[in-house]
Image 1 (cartoon, rainbow, N blue to C red):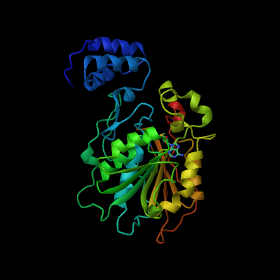
Image 2 (image 1 turned 90 degrees about the vertical axis):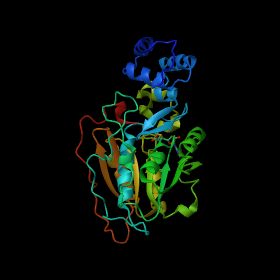
Image 3 (image 1 turned 120 degrees about the horizontal axis):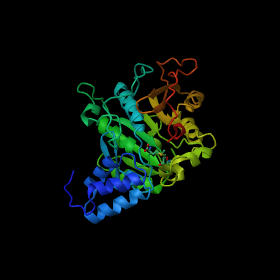
Image 4 (image 1 turned 90 degrees about the horizontal axis):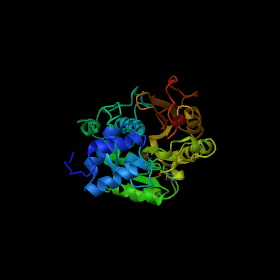
Length: 341
Ligand SMILES: C[S@@+](CC[C@H](N)C(=O)[O-])C[C@H]1O[C@@H](n2cnc3c(N)ncnc32)[C@H](O)[C@@H]1O
């Protein structure tokens, strides 16, 4: 933390933040002080936070999988729960071996925690420990024999793609978002990894050469039902773009479109991973099955996260009969923001 000479003493900042309803005022004050470049910068940042801007927009970054991800104002703030999607994708990418892109075992056993490394709090109130980026790196002896091809649809800031690149090392990374502000932000976050970021509607801007070759396809698409947007906290409802939240009448419209075309892009044995809510997961999984993917649902109590994974069958893989396997319900699930976003 910098020893910035502050015209606003820390206790004053804490008092202002607390009065504005910031539950973790001490921690936020420390983050603001350590990020501000000048005392007037600090005053400005405190003012914006007190006015209700999300902490990450005030700071200009979010901590995601131990990475500092730039988050511009108006761009969706990557959520801690989405680290679960990354953990699952990393585990699957490591199991996918061989130049043909086939996977074995046919459907990887669920990792009960989805955890590859301790998680890091973007705010220190988070009960989970700090992440160890080294723990996310590909272990010696398991380095894949060709770069994995990963595609992240609805990429927002590019957090998921950046975390996958950091964890997997040798990958070819493609990300897409429809919102130009998100695309600008993602390009910054993925520049060091040579990640390609396209602007457009889902698969539409991707090069056709990727068809049938994608190993890992991720999408944290908007999944809040239109009628539930008004119930979101103001930080999301007011400060994040509607296009990042609104999943249509039942919240699943974009997920359905992602699933409908996935088989065209996935390599044999490749995987589609979509974050959803526990309540929506059975429908998401049915959509996967209807579109030729072998679905399963995984979730994490710790991160309050649910992910549906769909595996593209290959010639060695018997397509099982449904129903979709699903972990037991967690009563704590769906408690926050109705389980969305
Ligand atoms: C819930 S945010 C997730 C952002 C990022 N994946 C993350 O987890 O931080 C959803 C993102 O989907 C984008 N989006 C919505 N509809 C889209 C579409 N049809 N095609 C591409 N991106 C879309 C939004 O602009 C927004 O950035």
